[in-house]
Image (cartoon, rainbow, N blue to C red; front, side):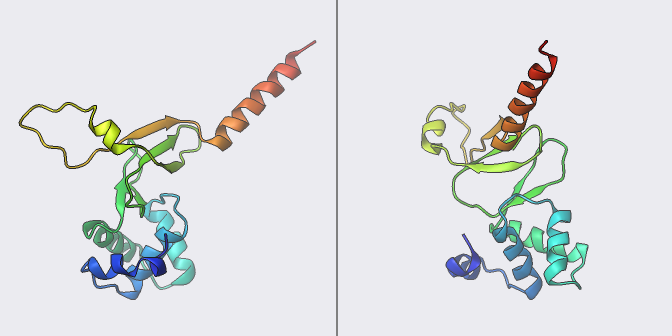
Length: 152
């Protein structure tokens, strides 16, 4: 999804889109790899050299507050940012640290969650961990090479 295809999302957010906010938002939409603030800053500097780290943090905070971007937290690592507001979960690669969007049947999962009577669910977050395709291929390739090297 890009900003041009979804102008209603921007205008209905109620957020005044300064050039800096628009630039940071575009950075997130451009490459949907869940960057941390420092990565957003480095990318933003390429197109807007005068932008500061504080401005990037402020822009990210405003985007999150207005519901245009979600924060993604993995263990004790830096907060990362996801512009995908569709129902999805995140796959965390345990080797490279990549975060990937994965579709799932939220209704199917919600129907299996039993909460005490006094509780009400506002959001369901699902996280999956393992190896991404690239890391799995590298791992299986290394395993074969080691076996071949140790064969008589």
